[in-house]
Image (cartoon, rainbow, N blue to C red; front, side, top):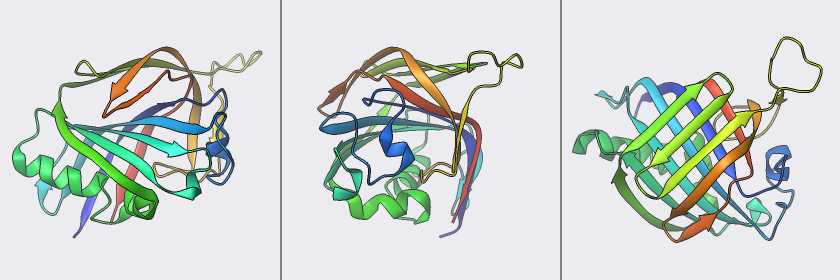
Length: 200
């Protein structure tokens, strides 16, 4: 069951800036729900001996206002360039069946809405991050550089409980259109990291 992956990550969710769920899962979202798109651009890695480097996975979720209440609805897009074997291994990792960070979220998921193959494009350009998934998802987030910070370094959220990492960059959505697996919303806030690492 050994696997590992490294890559970059971006997300956008329906909460206003800054998402209360990122402070702690048991804080209520801005609205009566939290809808989120998690985008994983895998640079290198393998799952049970299968190389998964260069592939992308997108998870879309619709959760209650308080995430720890459970009953999440979740769907997944897997890179259309993946072989059947690669797609199966990725679905197991990101569906939580092989443990790791997503495995910790499995008890919160009440309904799996499906797993689909799609063309997934991810572009990282400095503080700007763009994502397109077929005709279902098209968004851009921009890392927030605080007023007066002459180095241009964006603000980071440290010590958080998040499946990707405990230290992520805070961003805001500059463009957003999400309609996937029956989940529709306008992304407003976001998170990113150019480097995350998982293993189990």
